Each structure stands twice: as structure tokens, then as C-alpha cells.
Length: 116
Image (cartoon, rainbow, N blue to C red; front, top):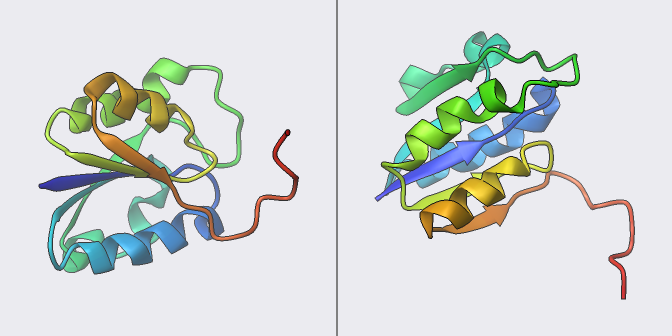
């Protein structure tokens, strides 16, 4: 089974998911979608991770959601599980539409109390 990781944001936002993906890679094929600007952030090929870059930038708020998630939508067709960070919440909807399980991974505590 392939696992899709979708992580947007700064280097500090994607690195924790990269390290998780690297560990998961020992058992599953990994497809990692993030800003194309992060292509040089990690040695994706050496880690055995397929990297797909989006045209959006980590330092700008995207108004083109379609182009931001296009690679993730395409990759999800060959993945059976989705892992995403809190800046890539659209990945939850992709997993839901594909009928696969998904989990949000956050390198820090969420700074609020969920509503009752």
C-alpha cells in the first residue's frame, strides 16, 4: 500500500512529516506533496520518497486551492492512506472522497480547546 503525505507551510511545518514518512517508508511506498519550493529541503530520492511539488508558495496564502491540491488529488488514486499537517486540511476531504483512512499529524500542540 502507498501512503500519501500532504504538508504545506514552512520548512519547520513539513520536516516532522518528512521524518515520519521516512520511517513509514520501510514498509510502504510514500508519495509526499508539498510546495515545490521544498524540493531541495530534503533529500527525497535518497529517502526513497516520491516528491510532488505544488505551484503554491510556503510564504504566501494561496487563493488557488485547485492548483494547491491538484497533485494530491492525482496521487491519492494510488494511495490507501493519507497523512496531512494542519496547513493541508484539504487532504482530509481528498481521503474522504476516495474512501481511505486519514490522520492529521502536528508537530506541536493545537493551541485551543475543542468546542464542547
